[in-house]
Length: 217
Length: 415
Picture 1: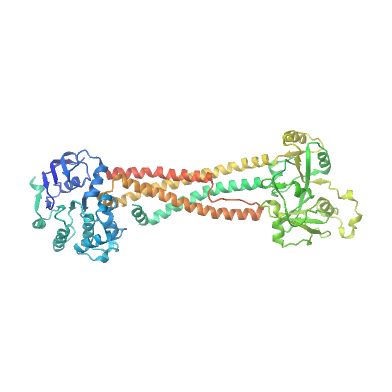
Picture 2: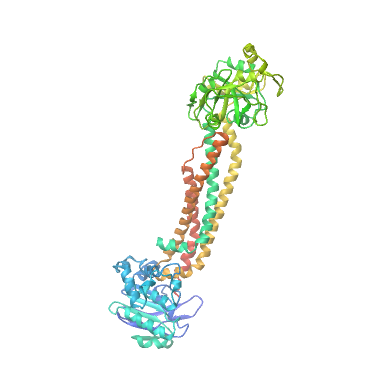
């Protein structure tokens, strides 16, 4: 489903990063771990299509990233990928509801997968342990944990086939991290989705099907 | 997408309002100059029609037109009645209407002429002067009021007035020894005619019989008016004369003949040419103002681009979140361009509303002070062209931040 071979990336002012091959199937939960600078986030950026592929092969859902125009990759991301940042996931001047529905704003196909937006948003919110009444709240009134959950709601709205998160629990304490991951996996659709999470926190490893340590590459 | 953009711009409302204010002010400045110029031109041209030439003492043609038609400024010299007699005998002249200026009543200027004035002098597109009340009888002791005079003074037919010597009614001495009876009130024309008090030329001469060099020597109160020799009431001088020619083709020959008239220095002015001369004088100042307002608009647009570029840094996270959710760099650039179009359009609409209010106020003032009616529309073709240029300039200048946005986001990592 998601395969990468011989992937490598070199930033203009840095060394070349080489990545291990990856073969992920639908329903898999993968944790990518490693020390700072090992290339975890760059790998995630390559899969998300934020940066252009330089070397190697990357295919997801029969979409070959090689030599694709950037707007084609953007369109693909809008439709098939949900992405959660480490922090500052939300736009402060938009309400929680508006932040969540951002993910279906840029893809008609993804929007078409959601029959009743409000109901689906509520369903996701509840499954992630948030109350319905946060919908119209300003994002600045939410705790960091709540903000990360809202970001996950956004990434999961419209059932993208691939869920990517870069250190989503870095701002949370241990208990909150565990709770967050538990709720995330409850919401995750095993029959349709792949989850890839980048984290340096190995305490989370038990919850995943597979752990790839970039330090061992 | 539009909703997102509105929310985004709302989060930056203060700088946005400031930049819109800058643009609105500069557009209002430019459009006001344009409108005042066009409106004034239009209304000045509207004020006289059917007159081929104005004969007056040799001086500036603009000054002659200003004081005979628009009653702005004062005549510096007169022409003799003898010259008028000579003109009347010319074969190429169809009609001639003499006028004498100098006296006033209340805040209005008195014009001494004859009944032909109401038949021969036209306004607008060859419109005839019409009477609201009374008739065009302008006998020795009659007066006829323009519409604004009658309205302001709440006058009725049969009212009697004493005019004042000199063009400033507050400073002048009243001709208290002879009064004129109101015989007619004109319909509103939207021209300086509305602010005139008409009297008979002989009547004008009569009230000045006892005057020498601006001073009253004797009063008419002790005189039997009926016994005054009619020859004594023939004016010795007049201010000017409006002339209609039998054929307009003879106008330049006529002008040349008048210039070469040896008895006294007079000139024949063609009203439309004199007005063109006036506009060319005013045009220099006008062009300067226009240039300045275009510069102000350019500065405002630069300020708008600076604002957008500055905001890009603070919107970095916002843009990154859009990108992560599938927005392409082109989408983000488009948002920047839409922002410029939005700011431009809002500024243009607000400016049009302000300009319309200013135009209304200005036309009201022109009407009060000069009796000139102006016909301002909400948006003229010329203005639409100007506004399109401003909008286009805004869009083009927004391409700078749009390109910056595109480049910044093309290979932006999601960190």
